[in-house]
Amino acid sequence: MREYDLIADWYSNERIDQTGVPEVSALAATLAPGSRILDIGCGNGLPLTRALLDAGHHLVGLESSAAMLGRFHTNLPRTPAVRAIVEHAPFLDASFDAAIAWGVLFHLTVERQREAIEEVSRVLRPRSPFLFTSGGDAGTGDEVVGVMNGVTFHYYSFTIDQYREILGGLRMRLVETHEDSGQNRYYLAEKLD
Image (cartoon, rainbow, N blue to C red; front, side, top):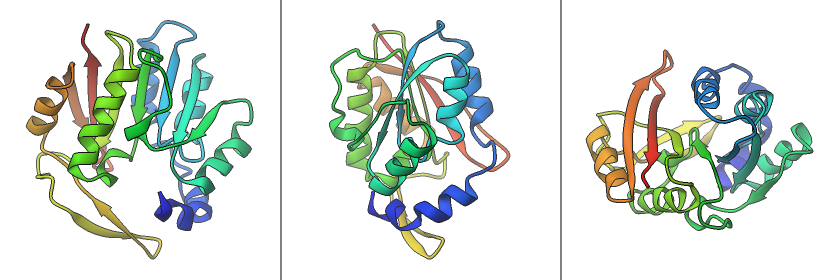
């Protein structure tokens, strides 16, 4: 994503907190040791990819920003990561035991979010979890414009019920949702058989 290329240096310095780590650590604890996890929008790999690696899992990063991916390779040189968009994930069917997408889906238009969730469903094994963040019940799929470090970003989000419906149409089910203290909305879904 071009916008993240423009803020990659700033983001690397700003994203030093542990937001999202409790959620991905809880997910990691439910998986068999050495599970293969897809980190969609892996950014620079800190702190979420590192938390999953520290929990003993195998990670593959997927990132559309070349600048962020460069930082990922610097931070986690032994962890594979590819430059691609989630709607066209370059992986075989049923390749992963879990997937996360922190701060990614809400940057995609509503149609692209549906395509992204369909791709995630395709690359997950049956009964595998998918943890992602997006807006909460205020979302309607309409575009919201925001600015981060002087760069304009576009945001789109569905309501919880709309995400439940979309997931259900793509052989997934919504297991639970919650917000953290920073108002990040987490969705835990599971791929069905």
